[in-house]
Amino acid sequence: MASVRDRALSILELLARHVHGLPMFEIADRLGIPRTATHRLLGELKEMGYVKHDQSKSQYMLTVKLASLGLGYLAATGIADVAQPLLDDLAEASGELARLAVIEDSQLIWVAKAQGSHSGLRYDPDAGLDVYLPATANGLAWLAAVSEERALELVALQGMERAREMGPSAPQTLRALMEQVEQTRQRGYAVVFDAYEAGTSALAAVVRRQNGGEAIGTVSIAGPSVRMTKERMEALAPLVQECASALALASVSSPMFARHDAKQGGHTQPGSH
Image (cartoon, rainbow, N blue to C red):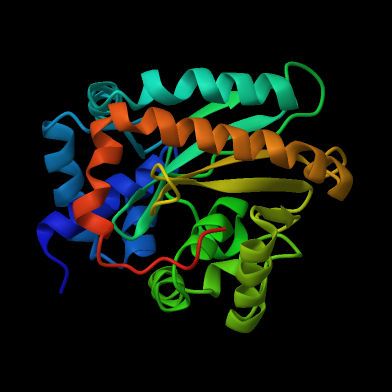
């Protein structure tokens, strides 16, 4: 049985993906928590200032307190100062959405973005907190940067089930996914077409510690598939790889990146690529 702590965190994570809120019964049903327990936990989170209740719609939603804590934490790590100018440049040069994700234990977490498309058709998703590895360019970039054994461990943690709900090109089997991982390893960067969702495509490169060390994050460009053709992906790939290299150099000034020495030292990386 999940602890009270685990249940409370699950509620916060679920509400973080639904900014307009959810009714209590739906929160309970989605998380498999008894409704009486869900009601009690929501009341406690409300008292702590993390959740508010819109009585007119019977919806529970997050307050800005959690976002404030997150922003304060990211500011303290220095990652915004390090990454944002580089992402802004990448977004401006590509005219698409540029994003940075950082590796935290066994997750790839979105931490910063910049939008380069200022008018017309643009891609600006609500992707949640963590990156779904099997159906994203960022995920493929990370999986290709670790050993096959570690890649399989990471995929097992998230499972392949969600891929059925993604875009038409999302890999549906572990074998198909690992073939894409190997192609990414050989190419040096990841590409996906209509994989995370129909009509959107992306490319990504892994951010490594200096001198070809371990992976510490990924950087990507994403946009509408009508613009993100195979030819354009190939043209944009050097920009993404250059940004990844610049982020690797800049990462030494951020405590968030510095922690990876202790956390990931035990995972064998494939040969440099």
